[in-house]
Length: 384
Image 1 (cartoon, rainbow, N blue to C red):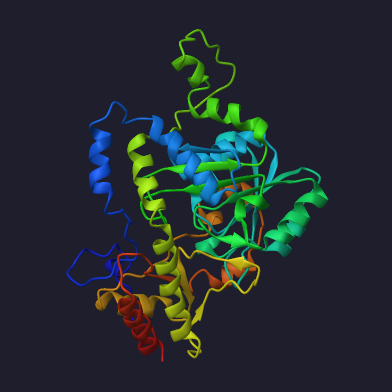
Image 2 (cartoon, rainbow, N blue to C red; image 1 turned 60 degrees about the vertical axis):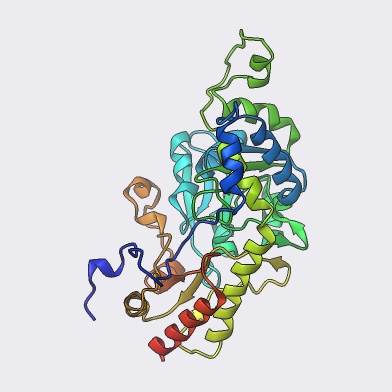
């Protein structure tokens, strides 16, 4: 079956089509955003402070948390606060959104890519162990699609080798491990509120960290290196002693997020129900394997429903004819030219074996459970 470029392009909106992603916006936001637009504050104001309090209580076990302009901002600040410097060795996942690794290029750190775990596409624990040296400063890991890494094992490795753990939780908001918030298992945890994440502010992010002493510095780095609180209280002669950034969230974004957090029980339940439908329908299909988290200690709030099939392109094109959008969301980072100098002769056996076999199916709040069943039945018919 010959590939056509349009088979892999973004699906054009049609009646009854099922897109791969769809943003969740609370119904109440239509009214609350009007209040924000009529107020004094549309940039960083009191709603950002309110959001931080609500978010850290619900998702971060009340650890210090700051809201920022994007998940990428949060990652960059995490790397700076972790004191990662030029030429420091950092172990990173080879399979992730480039936002995880690009901020390390800002700093000049030495990236050491780790292969994937073939069962859930998370970073390979075994490969991490092989990559650790005396120069390793940090391990960065992502919970792919909401499927959690082995957080206990990562902590054991980190403590044994005195390595900083940085968790990119952009895809795993609301997930728990050992019935605890996942922020308990890393020195730094970042979140993304980009348009298609569990909750969104159009674009936005948050950074949570265990060391409370870093809070003042984090707030300065978020806002040009200036002590914003002192400035607003009338102290205008603040010295700037470190390079800061314009990484703050706006009250418009914070309002959207506050409204969506109130609906998070529905958001997480609906996504997990869709994923469970896929699991149930594919369990007896020998030509389909859905990525699962078999760790009984992990409770996942699913973001991506990913299947493995030797007929990936064929399935994708057949689904497109049914107005169902499926695609690959992330790509192996070692193939990008910007990371070329870190590769050398590195081999990623699991990634190599699976890179052309994975396909992400729709899983969002704008689709019904009946539509999920239709997708699952269609995939089974296509692959039988």
